[in-house]
Image 1 (cartoon, rainbow, N blue to C red):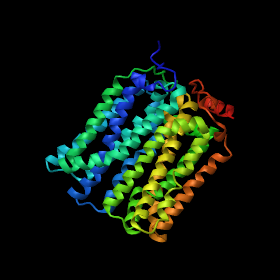
Image 2 (cartoon, rainbow, N blue to C red):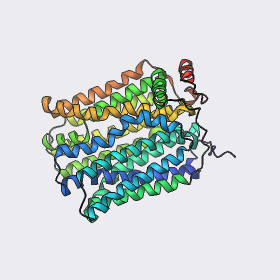
Image 3 (cartoon, one colour):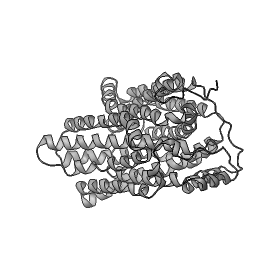
Image 4 (cartoon, rainbow, N blue to C red):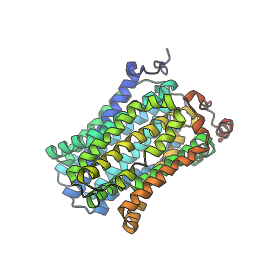
Length: 440
């Protein structure tokens, strides 16, 4: 039997040892990430007494490497062993994170080091994610894409629900820099488990003389592909508006406008995070009932629209806190419907010869708008107020569905109806144009 053929029957992934190893590694890694997301700003604030503006740069630097994802994806596409790149990226993140407790215990940790850690771990994440797209396509059979993405997304949602509490307890018991050891260990676990997975990895297509030319072909494929073009427009619009209502702005609104205490906000967000868990579990069922394309459209509305529920809240404490929890709960369901189905659709329509560079091109635009949205949100909140800014984010985000209304996406009920992956041809983008021309 070929190493690229796990059990083909949908619903059998828990009996597929290779997928279980991959899922386990990603689950552990996701929980570790939640610890670092809490620990890095705490180190900056409590140990280095950084200002709010300096702390904000930590988030910006984590996402900044995505602006180079287009080029990194083109480079990854020409690497023969994608799995090996994923292992190296995990090991690099573990090594970088281990530097924090070492310098902290030596009394020499600096804000510059925190910035370097944020940037380097973000860069390694881009390498991992661009290699991931090609690896996933050969790890999971096409018929199980939605189920596999559901399981992985549910784990991510669980990390957002329970991770902050675990991270807070570790920070309280060990200090923030030492707690980062848990995240470093999680990457070591991921590297070990991914390293033990064997898949058939097709050789890369014949290399072009220019890395930038390959990067351009990745973006060209996205722009010319009738499905990828509109879903990227939809996803980027969603990211822009939802990052206008970023977590920081939402917490500020809950504090200053809803007059909730830190404990009440934490409780509301924790309860709301269970929506992501539920959404991840039921996404495959809803996909079978509504269809893959319609499920993406439902998620595109259900993810941002509930922001308005929190923005319009008033009255007694239970109403204000309940509105925030309900908004987070519904948004969590929406983002799972959107992500699980969209990730599956993307995997099914991109051919092997160009997967990583297309993933890089997609990430450059899709994630590149996030810091822009967050910056715009800060300006709008100052000029027009927090409540109006959140309402604008909700309305603008929901309108992202217009990208899909007149596109072929809504007609796709199952992944079998999506265009099949083309052969891995890669001659100066000619195959890309041919594939795009054949799409409905």
